[in-house]
Amino acid sequence: KAGVTQTPRYLIKTRGQQVTLSCSPISGHRSVSWYQQTPGQGLQFLFEYFSETQRNKGNFPGRFSGRQFSNSRSEMNVSTLELGDSALYLCASSLGGRTSNEKLFFGSGTQLSVL
Amino acid sequence: GESVGLHLPTLSVQEGDNSIINCAYSNSASDYFIWYKQESGKGPQFIIDIRSNMDKRQGQRVTVLLNKTVKHLSLQIAATQPGDSAVYFCAEKGFQKLVFGTGTRLLVSP
Image (cartoon, rainbow over all chains, first blue to last red; front, side, top):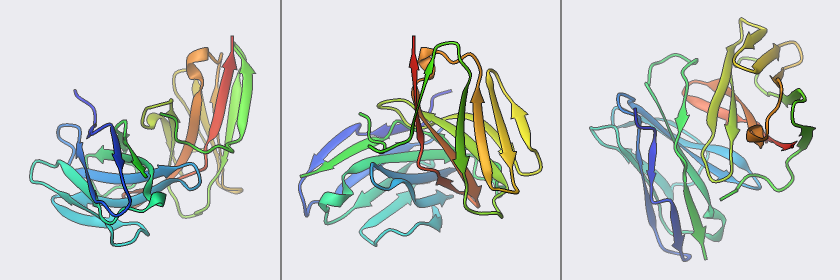
């Protein structure tokens, strides 16, 4: 069974640009969550999508957005990039059931550098 | 590449030793906890989990202990190997959202 796939692996952008990251979950998983990882803040929750709807959201500005398609693949978008957006963006998938003890499986991430 | 904290607590052990990594969590209402391992250039990898109605759970070479009174988790790795070198995170799970600890870097010397 293929794992969570994130593309691209690396991205370099300049301030003010926008970027789109892609995530393909494990087959059969309907929930996709996004996390930002930085040296200063660690792993921070961005948002979670289930059945094409945002089900949960972290404390990030509106420049960070996402969506999920009918095949459960997800994209996240960051507009008007700032230097502080440089981070490893991780996608995690799960079955999506409404129980707390459900494992999340992570992809290898997209390393975004904003110059 | 490596993008975890520059000031992570570090545990250095010799190959073959037992390792104990500790974690304090914040929410007394959390009922599910997970340990993840993150190697350089990779995403977090699931190691072991425990529900709040348990205080100990064992896997292959790993044991997780949960002390709800003091909101403390520990991960014990038996007979630590060089391949265990990584950053280890504990996470507490609220509804569909993981809250991660800051992580501990484990260095294993041959």
